[in-house]
Length: 238
Image (tube, rainbow, N blue to C red):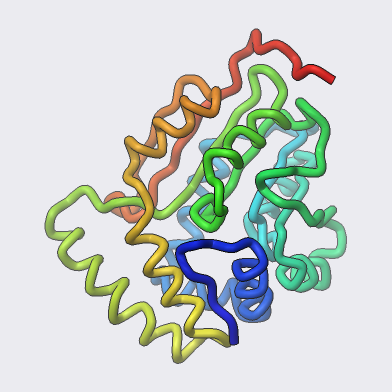
């Protein structure tokens, strides 16, 4: 089975996710000690979607993260570049408009969405700053963004426990529950290499998002970043 490395070549990352698609949701629940469900609920509350709004759920995988937006009455689009993940999702939820797309070159018009979100996917993009700019492009002026991503634990005791979990316990558990345990070695490596909360907020500002703020979940193991596109932003040139 294939795994990506920290070069994050898109073809390697896509192939890796194709290989874990069948058991992806179950594996995430086990490895997160069921915290993944609470994290998804936090994203839904932070994005605060309303009936009829157009929502882009980028790096949606099998669409588990998209379902709450649809249930809230939004017109939600799950988008991912792993065709294997999309195929699993489409079999499970054929009513969702699964769409293949690269985070750095999205197949949507300027200002197409009222709100956009990406959970645990930005870290896997070879050019994450470009992805944040692309998300800005497809969001209408005044629209909202929520990024949910692994981050840096803030409490010293938690930091001390978290590093051994990533390096030893997580790969061991993955060998028992995942179809491709090596993919979760990459997961541990990519989390350790990812910037902290303040740095990601800086990337959001550089991409043009305004009012960036974050909230730690599970002691900073995960962070929820929220920002908006400036209401008076000029439309993109044709």
